[in-house]
Each structure stands twice: as structure tokens, then as C-alpha cells.
Image (tube, rainbow, N blue to C red; front, side, top):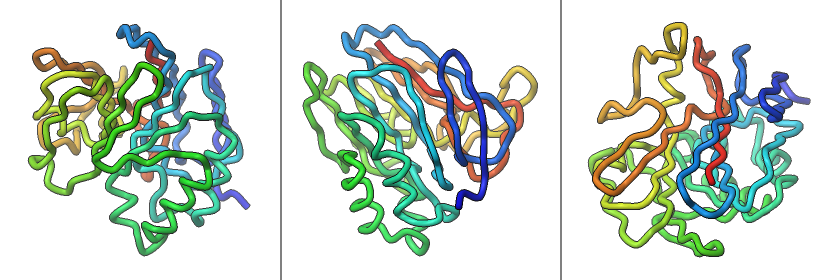
Length: 231
């Protein structure tokens, strides 16, 4: 039985189930960055029992970590939430997959993702059509992320990896957009070492988008959830 239920629909995106607890909306953010493919990016799912997740049409689905946490009822919830979504599905791990191993052991979580058809990248890359996607694994020390070269997309949970960026499109989450914001979505805090919160950042030839995510462990304040469609 699912412990929480959230209903939302914004611009054709509906989310039914228990991805977090706060009564905030889900926005569909559209970005034209010249990828040549329809890429949907979701981060920070924090699955607490999900009945259905509907997304825009896409060529590839990228998942930016913190897929589950200590409030996830079990690895079965990960399979139930993600298996119905069509592939290709590519993910990286976030801090909670590591920090909450007492709830869902890491090996069990990885097997659940595999069963759901999700390809997990841990400092590795995969070619998806014309796109080379490199996935960076979580690091507790945000100063230790390596530079990534020859990737079209760098998928990573923490936006702090962008400090070493030399090119490509970085897609990150982790911050929840600040979680607690002033009206209008102005963040009050961030858990980024380098001060990233949400939206577009540029560094030389590299570009990063930090998503507010679609779930949480604590209620949000004036900080909508977000699904990102990149073309």
C-alpha cells in the first residue's frame, strides 16, 4: 500500500503517486540546446511508492540520482515505478543510494534498477544514437569530480562536478532548487558546495542545467517540482 499520494498535472505532465509530500506543482521545462534528440531528464525521484509516472515523448530518458532513499518501502517500489517507462533509460546514483544502504542495500538497489530496464553509469559512458552519455558516480567530497572529455551529455547527481567541466552538456540535480524558496521560486539555501541551485549555468564551452527534481524527503516551500525536456 502506498503511504502518500500526490496528484498533479502541468502542461501535459501528470504525476500520480507518492513522490514526496508537499502540495506543489510539477512543471515541464523545455530547453532547446541543439541535441538533435528528445531527451527527458528527471532527478531526485525519492520514490516512496509510485503508481504511475507519465512523461512527454522522448528518445532517451536520463535519471539524475537519488532514485530512492530511507523512506522507500523496498527495492520493489523502484521496479514498479520505473519498469513501465520505455527505454532507453540511463541513470546515475546520488548520495541517498549510498547513504541509505541500511534501507535498500546498494546491490539490491542496482539489481532493481537493472530489472526495471535502467542502465546505471558509474564513471562510465554509453552511446545512445548520436549522443555519447557519460555518467559520473556520486562523490562525498564535491571537489574530487574528474573532468570529462568527449561527451555530449554528462549525467551527474551533484552540480558541483561542473567546476571541472571542459565541454558538453551537464545535467544535474541534488539541490531540489533550494527546497525552501521565497515566493516566485527564489532559493534561500543550497546544498551545493559551489553555490549552484537551479537552472542554466555556463563555463567556457560547457553548459549545465540543474533540475529542481520531482521528489523530496522534506516538504518544499514555493519550489515546484520539475521535468525537463531537452531537444
